[in-house]
Amino acid sequence: MAVSMIPIARPIIGDDEIAAVTEVLRSGVIAQGRKVEEFEQAFARFIGTRYAVAVNSGTAALHIALLAHGVVKGDEVITSPFTFIASANSILFTGARPVFADIDPDTFNISAADVEASLERARKHGARVKALMPVHLYGQPCDMNAIMEMAGRHGLAVIEDACQAHGAEYLGKKAGSFGTGCFSFYPTKNMTTSEGGIITTDDEDVARKARMIRNHGQLERYLHTMLGYNYRMTDIAAAIGLCQLAKLPGFTDKRMANAAVLSSGLSGMRGVVTPHISPDVRHVFHQYTIRITPDFALSRDELRKKLLDSGVGTEVYYPRPVQKQPLYIELGYDDRLPVSEQAAGEVLSLPVHPSLTEEDLAHIVRTIRSI
Image 1 (tube, one colour):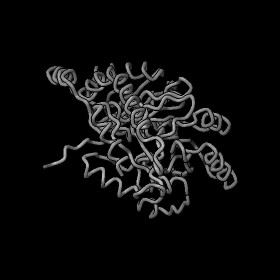
Image 2 (spheres, one colour):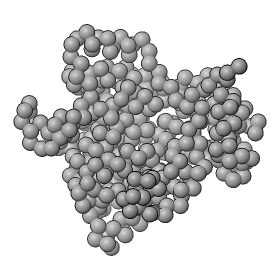
Image 3 (cartoon, helix red, strand yellow):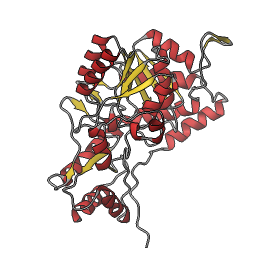
Image 4 (cartoon, helix red, strand yellow):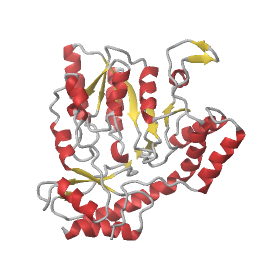
């Protein structure tokens, strides 16, 4: 008899999203139109910024944000090696060079101390660092006070990769509102538009340039004043996004409650390190990620196989730091970043999404404890 599977992620699409999409289809306006503008205004209010610019992916948001801040060939951007590759690749898209600072072992976010060390090395070597790109990994914000202080001292732009941090907060202020925020609405994210992304900013000039870049560099129709791309969001996606944004607070509460149940159930287990939540942050648990250390009875991958056999889907985010990816090795990267490399061998993400039942959570805990 087949084992019923608890998936690692599951988008929640209801009748209201279906009705909203149907309304757009019937309207005949299905590309970027009024719904996109409505979604942008709603998302800007949610994050607490003056502007939001909707695009067709989180990767596009990162690329546009960098370009809007003037990042060009020859520049360097400091970011995390422990992230999805799109963070670093968006820097390559501009012709600039990613520089990797190691991560904090507790939060998996970029280490402010290592960013400072990277800036010092760059200063000594005459490198042209233009921006910092902190990644709010798994739904927990980075140490933004330290990041913003460094950026201000060195005159750097801050591009927040908040693709996993919808509604996360640092000292009561939402991720994506410190510098220029970039979000993804991929189906596995805390809210979705099927595919999509958005840029948040208080800078009118950045917002203006972002709108031009997403639409072939047009200042007005058929007047192209800069190089741009087709990165537009559709009204279909925006209609889904408006419904999902209204549900996001409820989704987030459920994720946080599920994470609390998992942490309580797994606490005290030798070789299992449950997620650390920094003081003064709101962790929205895009992922619930534990560490499996050598003290555990099985290796991380052996545990993953046992969980799969028991009907629990898991994932490793991320099994290889960016600088160890074949593309980056070919580009000449040979950075030794020990904290990110150790994390890559130990992290395991468990289901935490809002669709989980009490029995699902109990089964996950029970399965791990039984080993």
